[in-house]
Image (cartoon, each protein chain N blue to C red):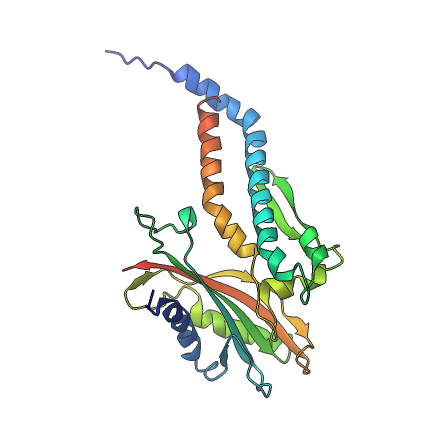
Amino acid sequence: MGVTVVGLDELIRDLEAVPAKGPAKFRKVVSKGALNVKMAWRRRWLPEIGRPPQNLPHAIRGLGYDTYERGTRLGAHIGVHHLNPQAALVHFPEFGSVNNPPTPAGMPSLLEEEPRFAQAVADAAVDLLEGR
Amino acid sequence: MTDSLDNAHAQAVLSLLQANGALAGKVYDGVVPAPFPELPFVLVYTSIEWPAGDAGMGNAFDHDSVTCRATFIVHCVAANSEACRTVTMQVRESLLDVAPAVTGRSCTRLTLDDAQPAVKDETTGNVVMDAVVTYSYASVPA
């Protein structure tokens, strides 16, 4: 009695390639996701705070993202850099104040991107496992 | 649409806050009344969305927007940081992990999406500390 399994060599080869090809592929997915959030954030803020009376052009121009890598964990910080000249003011449009209602843009943009991002991660994982 | 669902989603959470003995009569919906009220108090900015596409996960096959997402930006306003934390704690006690009741809808539990540190706000004429917490939940037809 015996069992013959065919095709395992290919699977092993593909799995062995994951550590080599994985980081670059997922890094791209995280960057693209962060870029999409940033652009959506800017799109939401531009008509709200891009002109007087609540004029924060530096904050809008300063929207950006930084990607980071800690071990197997990839991520991105998206928002206005703390050195931006209007950084200290951006919580007003995002969260409002006692006097002014908010025009939230960060969280809605993140939620909008979430399903697309999850799909892109899944697609990248399938590509890797299939050796693409 | 002539239903009152948007308001029902907002009121479901506002009434949860009002039901908390420590916050009763101190919850304001979108605007602080004049004259400036006694501290502490809670100011709630509500946004109700009916997201399209994949963002509305429960949306029907016929592309009708049936998923509702309610977001509450809650300003906890008090005289100092410690009092702010006491208010944010009362808000957490009232909202976190609670499923609001909206007639005809199945609601997810409320999640804390974001918490900002208390900051000084002098724009009111009184120096107050303001800590912002953001809660949200979603609902689909029951």
